[in-house]
Image 1 (cartoon, rainbow, N blue to C red):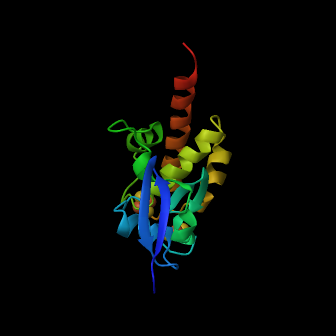
Image 2 (cartoon, rainbow, N blue to C red):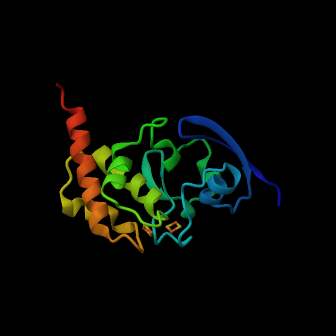
Amino acid sequence: MSKIRVSTTVNGDHAEFLCESTSSLLDVLRDTMGLTGSKEGCGSGDCGACTIMLDGEMVCSCLVLAPEAEGRTVATIEGVAEGSVLHPVQQKFLEHAALQCGFCTPGFIVAAKALLDRNPNPTEAEVRYWLAGNLCRCTGYDKIVRAVMAAAADLRQERTPA
Ligand code: FES
Ligand code: FES
């Protein structure tokens, strides 16, 4: 099968790759581009471990065909921190021990950041509802929700003019 050339933007950088027409974007990110932060938990859109942003919308990258990234903007967990400075969501996950094995964590962080980018002051119910598509098999959800609420508070403070 001849390969398809795809030209896209990943975490702010221009990127090109060759893929099969049936490759998932998750597979290309992980196997071709070496961006292994996004995880494959189910491969069927049920767990959220592969969550990325595509043109600013949250998607399960296991459900996106790699050629669909042509001309679009992809943001993955690898682009969330600014250099060595963690995003507040990442920092609060650490402080609140909101992870154990960490397999689900990249997906949760990308999803939580997407929520806080559009709603800086969510209620706990809104956080739980937003994260309902992300599954965690070991930490339990209370610590994760507390971490996201704490990150929201931090971000609001950062954005408040002195
Ligand atoms: S691996 Fe994509 S939703 Fe589970
Ligand atoms: S920390 Fe292990 S699955 Fe969530």
